Length: 160
Image (cartoon, rainbow, N blue to C red):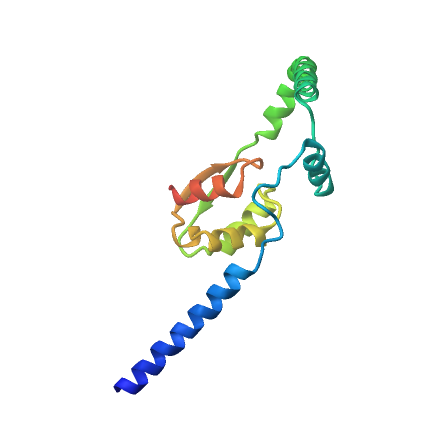
């Protein structure tokens, strides 16, 4: 670049700064910084955007009512707990999964689906691929139950 090009470039930058500066200082903001927000306008604004506004007293009463409901639910849940122990023992049936050399993640997933450990073999196979477990599967026999999550099953069969 020669002097003339450099000066023309600098002059262009100067003109751009002047134009942006003028626009910045001459435009007045719609909201003034000294504007005060009263309680009613804030409440209306929040309600218009889908929020529920409570006073401190209403919030405290709501918390007390919620705590009372939870205590009642705990008392109710304690009684049938004795009846559910037999059901839980039945639902905790353990499935022995044996992974042999050459088995693919899809075959493993279909075995788990047939034994009702998982609901969808395709979803489990996708999970193994997505999170990188499919390349870490170990050979051996593993104990699994039907109420395990995909993550728990994957960690067991990859021993990670």
